Length: 313
Image (cartoon, rainbow, N blue to C red):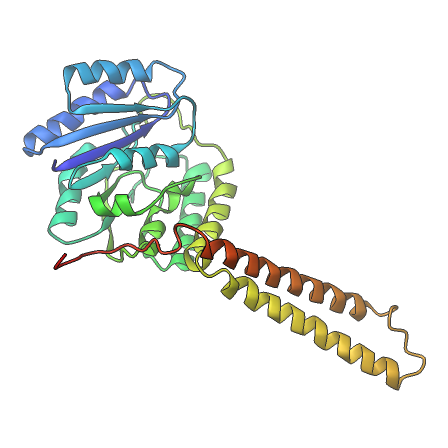
């Protein structure tokens, strides 16, 4: 299989026939062996009936249907599990991503050796106030925190080596940060390509304002898990020790003042309560790190490393 195209969707029945026809034409013109995997994320319209009809016409079109709406990350995860193509392409089902970009994206993976290529919608047709400006802000923060120099982390049009998608787990709402997940899994060659962004032809966007808050929370989660999931004591133990020593130092200082100044009242000073709070926080963080370390040591995934190559076995 040359290419697997994974398309998560939710209530996109109107666009599916046109998208399927466009994809078939691109694959035929470039003589590619392919599969198209539609992942229906619990649609309430007749999207699944359309997918079944498309499969009857073309066996290369396959479908996965969720019982209810689980989100884009879950849909991509299942699509990645099912994909068997040498190159895996992801795109949205709303016709805003152009299938004509697929041959160039595939070429970057196979000939230029990229593990992942993310699309960059340099010219967008979204609402500037609700999408463009927040998107630029999120991308700037993500670039700064992750060290990955991409302009558009959340672009749905991406290309991957097959082993890249098999080595990462997309969960929660982490689809926004798949390049970051790939980097933490050891895939360092991550590139970018300017792609066409088309105006939405059918329906309306399924994403609300909540994605802004969730986006930042997910970024913090993924950076923490990527660095400290297998060594939680390095984070909690370090800061627990800092807080404990800070509180202990303040407490010793106050005790010395108590013995040297007869009229000094220990419990009437704000510093006393600050010292007590810092000491308690330090102990709690240290214990959290210790418990996290015990859980990590007993996890079946404690040595889940990604091996690139083997020889002689």
